[in-house]
Length: 336
Image: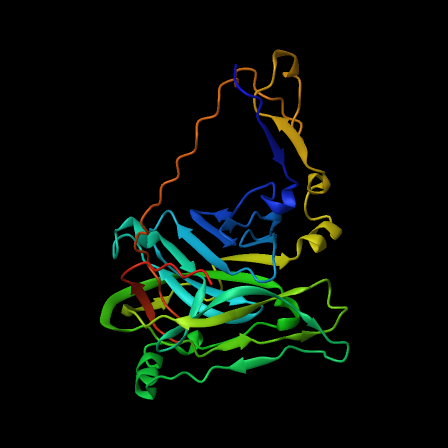
């Protein structure tokens, strides 16, 4: 007879949010992960024209986050521009399968910015410092330690439409937005160093206490050593003037999502003790979600074997001041 085994099912807020983990359309998938977990999306909505997808995700102060997007079709090259709190932080592409047929080129991961020749900073959620007398956001400008001649060379490869821009912060603060456009790639150019990010960063934004429940902001985390990579740039032009598809993740603390009734009621349920080996008279026991325990599942659960997979290369069209570029090797950001 097997020994009695029990496990505690914790409330959802500490583990997984019920629902889907990504926004998807036309072979495109976009998702955000933070704290080694995928962020489940809540209350997804689609605009009347079917081009903009919006949802809510939970933010935890101090946790780094990464934005991912994947193209499963790859019949056309795509450009993705990432806006965090209304600031254009990065521009990447996924090439079409004709130019780069390898499957690992189909996914992009954006979780950091190259802030100097040999340092990076990761994206991180942070608490907002309330200030009753403040009505705006404070920004700082990077002074990159980089040869000005290289910056000029990179700028010449970019159209005027691709220069740095920011959305209206009053409408976009507390959001992570990815704009996807179709592009036409012409040819690859020479290899060069990964350019340094020179755009705006959010720094200790002071927001009024009455600011629509926005309690968190996105910031750049601590600087850490990471030398510039060698990248391969490509030339191309946009097919779409306006975004083909837009994915918007509105982030808030869990208590705010609960207050707004964005997440389901089961978030508020207390932990429930569950018997992993129910007796015959316990078959009618139910989980917190109202699902009957399976009658046939009376065996000892097999131990879970966890294996580590080597990271595969991925395509990274790089920062917003660079032309589109192809990353030669995938790099995992270190955990700080």
